[in-house]
Length: 251
Image (cartoon, rainbow, N blue to C red; front, side, top):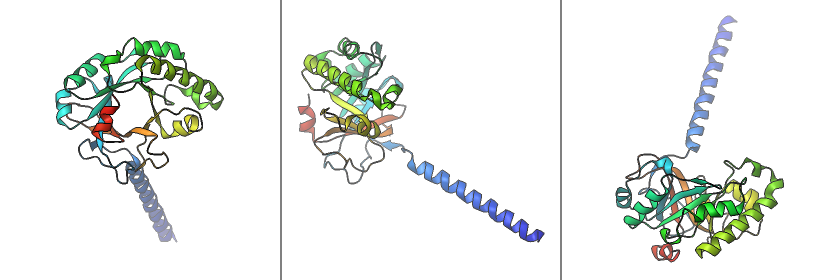
């Protein structure tokens, strides 16, 4: 009887170990793995084009944009501003150096629900000159740092404020802003609204963006863990939904 109990205990230990190993394997298989900007090419992407680019902020440190150019990066977005008064400390350097190396560049504003649209417009306008960027302004909307938006009672005010901000930016820069967001935020707050801006969609899980019409999205952020020459830290990787002629037409 004791021998049977020992056998059962040993069996249970083995089963538990196998469960732990399987769980760890599943966890790591779901993570966004490191990927080179040159080698990345998700299968079944709806667009037939594979124009690759990056988006960066001060988190990437001082970037060697000459080497970035050598790594076949075709466009870049840099963080410009956040909320009513924050300015990314690498903004001027990143814009100047990307343009010097003939990499088309855009600048994004990180939206904060606790600041008025006009405060956020002024912050962007005062730090991003019209002629310094090649693409329309970008408004980055997501739940991070906007916890109040998880309360859907705030949705109406958010949509109203977002429309006001995009109207102010459109009027000043002469280009309708692009909205950057992720899949959850999009379906929670934007999908059934009358916001019709083109999208820069962040989605690390999909092999394609088949929940969107191809005309709805212009950029797709598909990795947070890119490897690019000239950038020591991991960097976000993006696709453009078109060819080079179409990319330059955004200017």
